[in-house]
Length: 496
Image (tube, rainbow, N blue to C red):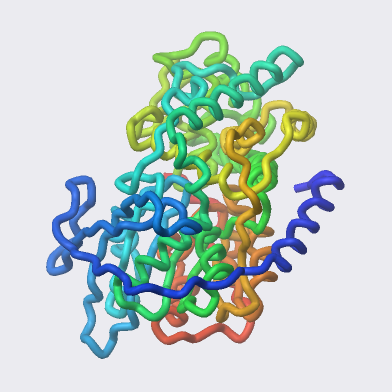
């Protein structure tokens, strides 16, 4: 990926600033309230017997800088360690990503995939971050028409559509301000890091052990910056780089172009299965034909915006590639959508909360782009490929945000113990250069890379014994690798 020279200079400056950012004093800890666990909501899946999931609520300040002010509640879940008392290593907080991903159920779903040694050693603790799910969920209402079906084409191509694009961003920001009200400035990752420490204290734990995936890696790095001496063992998987959110979104949009080209080549190599062409160029033409067709005549409310969302989702996980190719073929041959339509509706209540929380958190975390920057970056991306996927450019909304943060969220600390970072070599959602950048802010930490892999989410996700064994040895035994680790990946997916 070729990043523009001005962006390279900016990213280097941001890395330097993040390195020098002070973590600030840790407030004196008052006696922590106890967590009273009981029955979980029906939305939380039950683990297999004999394990049991239980839930609680924790009262925390809306603004940790004013701890005697208004309070909110954070929903917490727990599945106790399955091993003998002598095997227990403490509590392992987990976060699935986002911003906006619900973590309450994640204690069950992620724990089921963890190595047995980790399940025996740790109470797995899930929680909905503030603004998400059952933890004072934010509501941005219509979000500038984001949920209108079919949506307008999300890729502006001329002056008129560029003005319309910026207008929709302003409307989205206005809707979030109206919906979130006074809570808007207090939904930052830094505030959530304080919530994590309150969960630690309420559990009676001296240290915070943590598994954060995608945005969860950013949250873990923010915790390490604010509470470096309370960091236990942390695995940060599929790492978000130490950039402003808007700059991260730009980097991701370029990585998606590379991934889509790989998808085109893979599909062409299996022409006998998919029938979309025997060259990457032929598959690309088929892809563009589908998108133009849906732009001209949407099918059941599925137009170019919905198509781009489906492509964005599919490109991040190679097990979804066959479904995407089948969906393209189905539309071309029969006019049907099939696998292009996601299982979960984009406008479901949980999706609406996710999309709202995603923007609210990103815009509370640091500097915003200017409208001219946004348009200039879109033009640069379109110069690389006239038909990009801009679905992940959520932080563009921050250009019109009503509450500008006083500072960017600090990440990492030289005072924290070594952490374990995990990355897929060709992950388009959190490109590996982000893991390399964050590691520089965490001295002594190690990077585990899954080579020849193209998916988002690695530890206890890809089924790789090298990755899972290295992370389990670190979590259970505290063994930090002597050097970075390279694990052999699976390559491009097999055709089902």
